[in-house]
Image (spheres, rainbow, N blue to C red):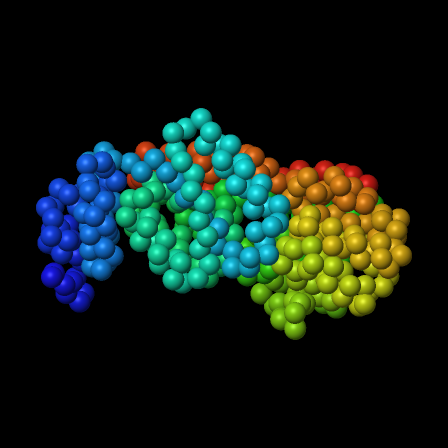
Length: 363
């Protein structure tokens, strides 16, 4: 039996010797070719697993072989969020963008370190030609590991302002700023915000847009006149995050978190007259609480969300919201990924798409 030496990378020849077959048989198994008996295929696969062999992606490329598949990887740790419209809309837009290609779309969940390592080995093994990543949080190293492995990779959104992997994003700051600006122009003066999880850059950007709009209008932020420019001064208090401002509560993009946040905000500021929620689902939760507490929308409290999912047209009243162009985001992600698959040496591309304020009954 051939054993892998510590600190060494197993070779194709070692796998063949371990399985008791020829090098060509191992190659046929790796490339999923016909003409290999099931018992032999299982022996080779067992040898690959025992030795920790990872097929050489570069060598397969030189041989002109392609997997004709890309992976859409969802890295969200909370199972509840997979029921939110953002995930299904993203899958649909990416799938539509691949309709006229020969590329198969694979959906993959990566939530733990073990799953991250397993997917990295899977991708490096040549089973996919490129990776689309969504819901990536600030501390996640998977995009860098894929890039270091030479795997074409495109992010939906970004982890920070100096992202060094190709990404496609919406103008989250500008969209939020426009939404809050509309509330201010409509005479609202005590405007609260339900932020997304602030370990995600998208949530930081939408909160920044909220603050910029208040600062542009010369409206002081409750509790801290300098808070309009400060995201770094945020402090965690219990289940919510007070961003140096008692008019801001952190949610997690779910409707339930919107309900909790709206309840907290009304407890602190029963006289607030507007709410900007960083997602439509959180806005829907806020609307439910406002209705339950006897507030009329928009007469007493105006509400604006962010995303423009189908949900926004069916709330009571229909939701004014910021539309992020998910169809265009999906098409652009796929286009950039296919280009990187054809030309791996191209520079990273950073694309930010415009948002649009959609006015309905809630504001």
